[in-house]
Length: 121
Image (spheres, rainbow, N blue to C red):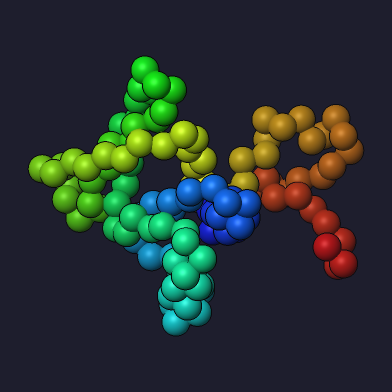
């Protein structure tokens, strides 16, 4: 989800940065994942590799400062930061649909929270 959103935001002309905890598209062919990253970088999407956010704060000018550290630096000896106008967080691969009230819309979900579809969807 993060790469898709970064792609269309960059295509709309927005300055877009993706923070990557470890590798892109875990579980996918990494040669293809790296090709996707290189293609996105050619299109001006920026990447902050092997990092995780540790703190966010709203600045007086309305921007959001994200403090982050390198993933492998568990002691957080060196913390970097970058300022953004907006922050979009796309984490995990597990559906979080239970609180959406899908049952009121007659949308069925399985026990993991995934929306049940037919063989065409």
